[in-house]
Image (spheres, rainbow, N blue to C red):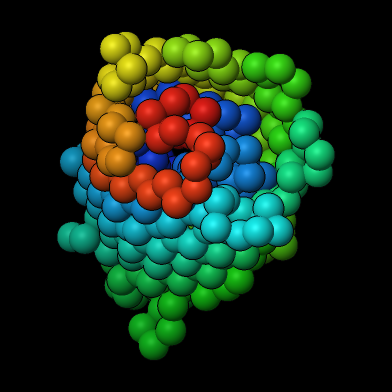
Length: 300
């Protein structure tokens, strides 16, 4: 790969088409399957039963991700929303050959009309090639031959407050503080606004682990619905850890029963720029009359 491992691994985040297109700024507005990865509290903010299959690829990082996810906030009479997700990823197969499996189970509970709380239990297993570091076969730079580099269970937790069309979110990832850049502890605050056809959000993230000191990330993006079926998205991200700016855009066709969405992010103005693309296919099941239609921004 032509990028650094930190740039390629990207905090181990699972990219979604909508989240990537909006610069990663969806901690407040990202519901449905996106909430599994960004903020579990948001699963209870839209009445949905969604199934998703996603795939992503980065040619410079030689990174690929494949995953399945499901979120249900309508079939449970107790109003507790739940979600399941699983992904497998690989980067730099001809070099460090790092692969990881990410399995998640999440739950969210609305507290009245204005607040939702959520948590995610995450199992992460990371394997890496041996004798692939710059020092050759070495305990300093090497992988492990007979066991994974990392095999842990960690926790995410989030809260989202809603007032009118505004949402304020606070979320923490890998709160068990594993002290490894493979599962870095991060905290994010997001503020979003959603109207009938327009959504905008800005997020700020602090990474407490990857760089040995706290580094920040700023993200912003917007989404416009056209002709009730087409989603146009764009965003920007600045990463203080890798000192990179990145522009992103995406398109989606949203039918009441299914959707197909694509997104691309490209680093700007750096020597070793990376590109990341995502394809997402979703199926919407609506077993209850009066649940949120699948083609509205709030059910995304």
